[in-house]
Length: 72
Image: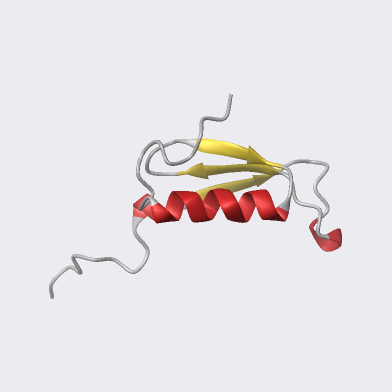
């Protein structure tokens, strides 16, 4: 058995999604924080559009460190 050199789910594209207590997913109101597990970089989002834009930006960078802006 050989290990796959290109995993289907690379850790550089693994995320933790934390929804804010005021989020109401059933009503389409999402707000919270997304963190890249490998780099530790994260950002806050206040809408579905912001979440998807941040995720797309990070994925386009291959999950590289610095592709998500810091959440202070």
